[in-house]
Image 1 (cartoon, rainbow, N blue to C red):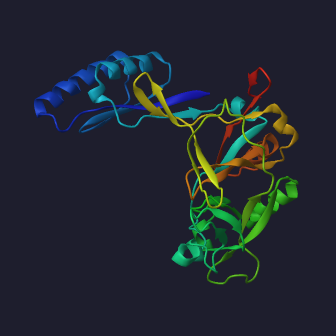
Image 2 (image 1 turned 60 degrees about the vertical axis):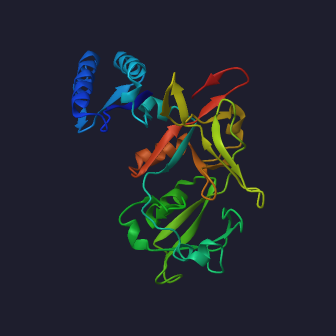
Image 3 (image 1 turned 30 degrees about the vertical axis):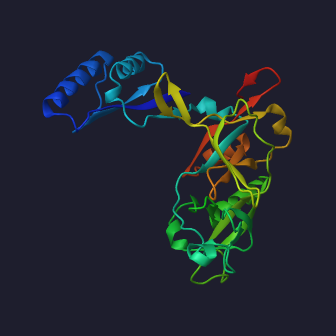
Length: 309
């Protein structure tokens, strides 16, 4: 696994022109010392990628400590997993990589979003969190195009009829399928799309070592949401990187092929469970050539030893 930082130096456009040019020359000298040959230039900045803990990365951090006025306001770290990382993990966080489907047609209406009689979900009257799905989704099915996988804006997972049939035939466990209808002709003919509803809920994550932040709780319905910790620091330099997910090793005894997290990740009212899949599902999706999804390893902890398998 590699950790890649989206790095930059930012020039202050409010400074006099002569000072900006002096800063630009200073940055170019630093980039030469870092041996950075590929970078994107803008009128007031330089963008490039670095591997965390590389020599160039250390020089970049030193430069930011020396010149905090040139530090970017947002630094993001992305994790790049190897095939070995992914193919050896017993469980993986999983999900479609696009949100092509608008929310349920009637949920787009104000009365529906507030939990009116036509809404697809019953919602808390105070925080508007989804409490229960009460009918099939009605969407504009044309937005799916030729995709096998997509998400609604509310993070419901939508499948093509082809993929839905393939998952059933493969005998995977921990989910059910619910028809998704075109809002223009609801409940007519065979459904073109299906909603993947994950039915097996895992116990809470192991925390620590899983880290959370920004927890919220509705006092009316009791819904609680939180974010996986993403705010970290290198000294005084703040950066953003999602924490890993950890479970006690015993969770394998309760896991099925598709699993939902006990935790709702995000903020109210839109926090939602994450989907955790088995290694069997991961390999099957790869073998079948299914596109439009991503996965990252979930780590297991024992009583005294942390391992990823």
